[in-house]
Length: 122
Length: 113
Image 1 (cartoon, rainbow over the protein chains, first blue to last red):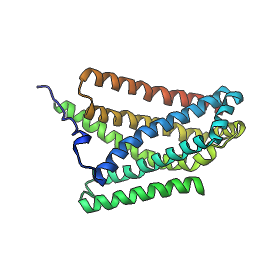
Image 2: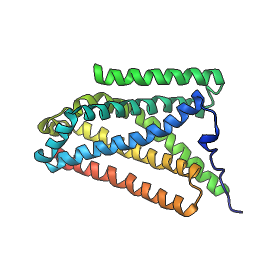
Image 3: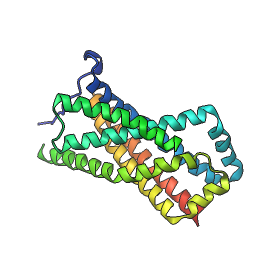
Image 4: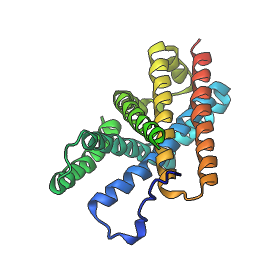
């Protein structure tokens, strides 16, 4: 018998709730994190190419768009990291109660902004 | 089917292990990001002349792309219906998750020498 794993329910048929919003954000941030790490790999590559090439990164990094991207990626990493801890607790069997899951979700969201602020303001 | 379940469980566990290992590495990386993005060429080279920095960044690349490979596989499993497309997507992610860490680590080691 061919084993078929079930396909995920499709997002558009559900009413938006905090839990589903945080869950899809976890997946979205994973993609931004991938782009962020690729950007960092590019930083290494430009450094490897030498002073003249790296200069383009320095110019980009000083622009408003550059700063916005770095801060955005920091938040994306912060959120995925903190929500990942929440997932690890679920994996161990804790925190499934609706109320607890909602509270932990709000805590993760607040802490992700706090961590971003700490990284860039301190 | 038993074999497949074993493989799925192993992947699931490996992804969590990578996640736990990434926690301290990413916190270290985030608190260096402010500096990293403002470094001049010579400051950046100096940063990579520290062997511990190269080690931490290399581990971060390896674990994060390994974590990403499995995670993307889960997303493909959920949303891609066509087996052929799923296989192709997984293969592309595998190439990316090998190529980027390998290139980054090689470049860092050469720069660090």
